[in-house]
Length: 144
View 1 (cartoon, rainbow, N blue to C red):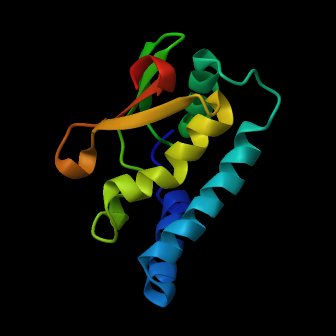
View 2: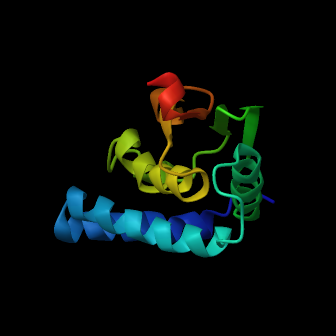
């Protein structure tokens, strides 16, 4: 499936409208709520929390359905690498910083599927000129 520009465009336009009307902080807050509500419905709640293979399966399947090319080159019981080969929100590059936008969905994905003992760090980003966006997801106690 190809990148679903209409799907992502709706989110981009919503963010831009919220930012124009209420400012960046409020736009990010509401964008986070939109992401959390949509993703929780997509992932459901009938899965084994804390399992990186389940994260790969749930997130990979949903990303594929909306036309995002992603890969998981490393998946172990303690860490994983989640790469976006496509930029889901290219039209927001001039609207906010990449780390603020990514937090809107990455914090939720990690906590909802893996749990509070997991965290992530963005090591590469398309908006910074990298070939892809890469998030290293890890168990906190092992890498803190």
